[in-house]
Amino acid sequence: MTDFTQLTVKELVEGIKAQKFTSEDVVSFYISQCEKKQDLNAVLEIFYDAIEKAKEVDSKIAQGQTLGKLAGVPIIVKDNILNKGKKMTCASKFMQDFVSPYSATIVKKLEAEGAIIIARANMDEFAM
Image (tube, rainbow, N blue to C red; front, top):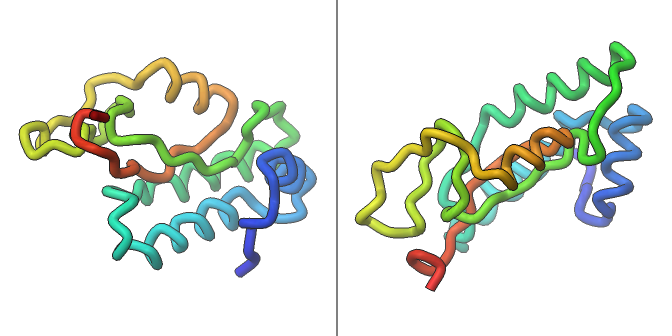
């Protein structure tokens, strides 16, 4: 597996669009990094459906479709940012069962440009 940590976001997008590597490769790599470092408790939840989203990006590239500025780039959002259908707890036990009914504007904008949300990051409770 290629180490993508030395590439900038711009290099990732260019490489994905030029088919030097796939979005699936990049997303799978960063998911594996999250899994390897679970003892740090930096990531609360990994979204494995991100791999399917990466495959969709790769399919669009193969079909010659126009893609956004962040096509296939994996992103981790803090646990206080709403992502439709995903948990959002603000790192609080009080909100441990809350599932977001909609996505925050930033998530919508990132996804509109082709970014792929791969995980939910830990934080201080309610970002205090």
